[in-house]
Amino acid sequence: MPNFKFTNIKEFGSSYIHEKDTEDIVQDIAPIGTTMLYATMKQGKSLLGLSEALSVANTNVDTWLDLKIKNGNVLYFGLDDSDKVLNERLNKYCDNLPNFYVVNSKTYREYCSTINGMSNGNKFNTIVNDFINQHGSVSLVIADTFEKIRYNKDRTYNSEVEEVSILKQNAQYYRYNLLLIHHATKFKDGNLFESFYGSNGLGAEVDVLITLQDSGDSDYQYLYARGNAFEDKKLLIHRNDDLKYELASINEADLVEDFPDKSYLKILKYFTKQRNTIIDNSECFTYQGEYQDFIQTLDLDIDSRGLGKLLKKYEQRLNEQHIYFDTKHLRNGMHLTMIIPANMNDNVSFFEDGTFIIEKMEESLGD
Image (tube, rainbow, N blue to C red; front, top):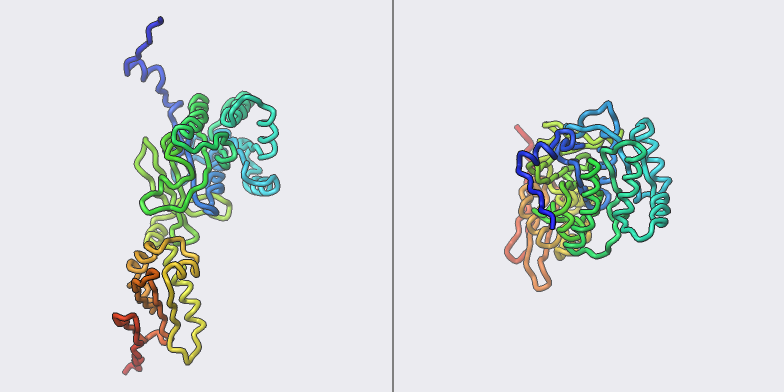
């Protein structure tokens, strides 16, 4: 039996660690290996991935979101859109980038169907490797979406680790970053980095996790990133008319950081609209009902417990907008009463039994 060769750290370092091999494609968030970008529906994850691709493929650009870039060929698997949508999007943004290459859904399916006895992951790798043989190298490969290149319906930890490992090993061998665009469940407080569909095996095997979340202002989003080689990132980003994602300025960050929860904004918008419908002789607009009914009426992305916390957190802000509320625990659940007085100068006071009184406040006429 041959002896196993052991390597000390000095030999290992001189043999395997080279600056050109370890340089990230995009500083921190796109290392040699795998990155998974996930978000809930219609958050713009595909556009974010495409924005990154445009920067990497453009030799006149050296940063993306103020992060250093290693430019090179980009191979984009646009498997989640029809040819019409994909063609319109890529012609609009990628027409003048000779380093940008695309594989559409139809071509991908037809090619994979001709390869027998091979998993989808290895079929995907075969196409990437064929590209490298033809063009010399690739810096960034994007699978949009990850679900379209998967082969194993088993979502257990071990099977998902094995599935990603096949893709990761190829990316490490040929020195590129593979960006897997994936779907997310509804985010839970403090659980951003575990809110993707599937087991934690996905998160354990990829090198970097990136997710998007609303900031409360529709023009801005938060990008969260976690990897082994850097501290967690929280970036406030903004997409301009040319699809390019940009890092928000410090002043913009201060503005949005103070922006309330999106569910609060929906509540505020709902009652502002109701205020405009109050006729002159109305004393107030009143909403009364169970928590769950209120959540469904306003289409809030929270549960009853979350609504209770939100109302408590933003009570002062609501009062400043002349919106008052009272909650009662009844047999059928939490009951909510919300009131807008017709006269903005009036105050509302609640009694212990849930009834209320509107205190008429005389307007000051000045001196």
